[in-house]
Each structure stands twice: as C-alpha cells, then as structure tokens.
Amino acid sequence: TITTAATTTQAVTTTTTAQAGSTNLDDYPFVESTAGFDSFYDAAHGEKVPWINSGQWEIDNTFSLLHTSSMKSIKPVGEGASSDLSLKLKLAGWTMLKCQAYVDVSMPHEMFEMSIDGQTRHMNFAPSGGWVEILTGIPPGEHTVQFQVKNADVAPEIPRTIGTGQVWLDICDFAPV
Image 1 (cartoon, rainbow, N blue to C red):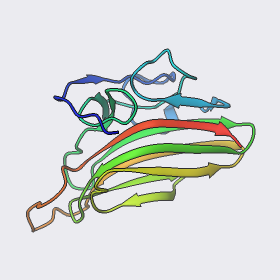
Image 2 (image 1 turned 90 degrees about the vertical axis):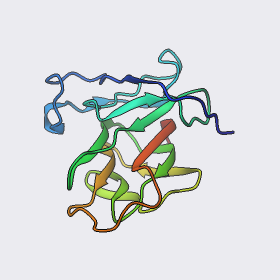
Image 3 (image 1 turned 45 degrees about the horizontal axis):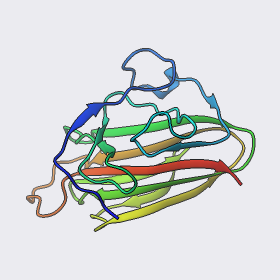
Image 4 (image 1 turned 30 degrees about the vertical axis):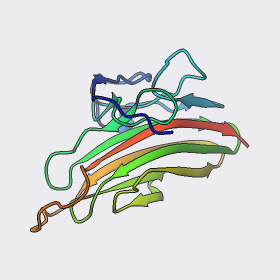
C-alpha cells in the first residue's frame, strides 16, 4: 500500500553527538547498536536509529508504505553535489539491514547509491516505478552506512524528461542474524 498526500515537511535532526550541522562523518562517533527500526512516523516506536543527517534529508508525506510519512532526500544543488543520510554503527555480530526505497532519479542528472564503508551495495540510475527493497548483510565491527543521492559531476546538456532527482526511504530496520 502506498499512501500519498499533500506534501508537508519538517527538519530531521541527528541522534548522535557531533559538531552541529557538520557534514564530515569523522566528526560523529560510532554508535554501539544491536537493532533499530524507523518508519519515520513515530519516534517512540521501536529501537532508536542513530541517523546522521545535516539537513540533507527531511520527513515528508508524499510517499509512504507503513504510516503517513517517510524520509525524503533534499535535491542536491550543483555539479557533483550530494544529499547524504548516514549511520555509523558498532556491531557485535552479523546484522541484516533492510530499507524500502522509492527512487525517482534519472541519469545523466543524478543517481542513488547505498554503500557500506565506501563499498556500493545498491545503486539506481533510473526511477524505480514503485517501492524497492534494499537488503544487505553487515559483518561485526565499526561500519559507516550511507544513503546518497549524487548529482552528475558535469551538468548534462539534455533536459530532464523523467524523475524528480529525489529518493524516499521508509521502514528501515537492522537486526542481528
């Protein structure tokens, strides 16, 4: 089920301690965690997810799977610019990360990538046409998980014909396996 409604947004703040507004992931600590769940609707539901967000993603009610809202990327401005949503986790054992994504990017304008420690685990170059599942295992240890919408390094000479250049995430959870 996809819920659609008039768009309303609110800023999302990080749940980790770092220099306010820092976009440098080195400024954030790894957070010991065993499990987490976020539907971007009810902060009291489930385990707290320590997102690192410097205002590049926001809560939005345009698309949603579970409730009435999801997390939406803010369109990056400029060649090579990106909108990043990250986690820095310290895991005691193997963990499965699962998120639902509604991808509306279009190369040569921009792309969407999910990576762990700089290694790409999921990538989209075109609109997904609906919700897709991102699923990956993470070994024990300290890891940086990053969801990124990235503009092309050079502005395309062709006009956009599809895609908004944004991504929505919903129902993100990680749990031991």
